[in-house]
Each structure stands twice: as C-alpha cells, then as structure tokens.
Amino acid sequence: MAFRWTLQKLLDVTVTREAAAKAAMFEVSRRIAALHGEIVRRKEMACSLLQGLGQMTIEDRLARQQMLMDALAAEREHIRTMMLQLAELREQRELRKAELVKIIAKKDTLERLREEAYETYQRLIGLKEQQLADENFNVRFARNMQVPLKLKTA
Image 1 (cartoon, rainbow, N blue to C red):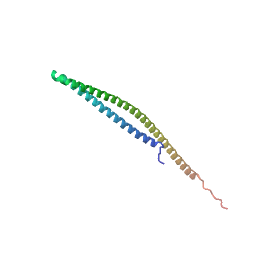
Image 2: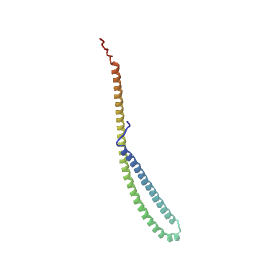
Image 3: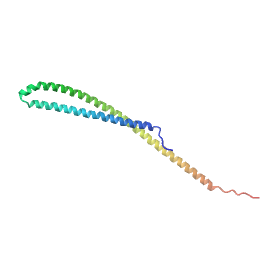
Image 4: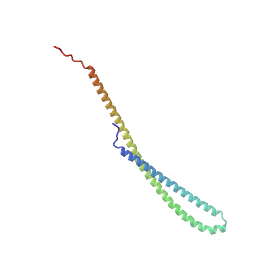
C-alpha cells in the first residue's frame, strides 16, 4: 500500500501559484528597473543640455535658450508622469509581495501537513508489520507447544 495524501493536488496547485506569483513579481521588478533607468537617463540628458547651454556664447545661447527651456518643461512633465508610473509599479510590487508571502506560508503549511501525514503513515505501516510479525510468532509458538495426543489403544 503506497502513501497517498488527500491534499496533494492542493499542494501542487499552491506550488504552481507560487511560481506564477514569483514570475509576476519578477516582471514588475523588471519594469520598475527599466522605468527607473529611463528616468535617470532623461534627467542626465536634461542636465547635460543645460550644461551645454551654459557653455555657449551669448548669441548662441539666446537663440536656443527659449527652445531648450520649452523642451525641458515638456521633459520635466514626462519625467513626472514616469515617476507616478514608478510609484504605481512599486505599489503593485508590494501587493504581489504580500500575495507571495501568503502563498509561501500556505505552501509551507501544506508541506508540513504532508510530512506529518507521511510520518503517521510510516508509524502505521510499522505497527502493521509488528502485528504481523507478532501474529506469525504466536502461531509458530503455538505449533511448537502443541503436545501430540496419544491415542489409547484397547
């Protein structure tokens, strides 16, 4: 008789859910990193444009300054939008993290229950084997102790 645990399918589903939750959290983290990198890149580009403007001669600077300031204002607005997206993604990551913690706790509980059920099964098998061995011993002992009956002949 092989060990069968009634909650095995639930454990399997929980393990699958854990893998899916980890993948989803990884995807959100990847998107956060990409968006953060894009924000940093855009901020550095804006700083370098401003530094480049400061190094120009007065005549060139006046010609390009208004155009650059308009572009930087639009860029700041775009960066602000990206920062809002970044905050939303971080919030999503925290929610997924909390979900993952719950799934892992459930999986750990199920695995512990499975181990306990298996230990109980092993003890039961051991008891049955011991009972069978005791029964065999008793039968052998009873056979060895039988006194042959002597028939009286008349």
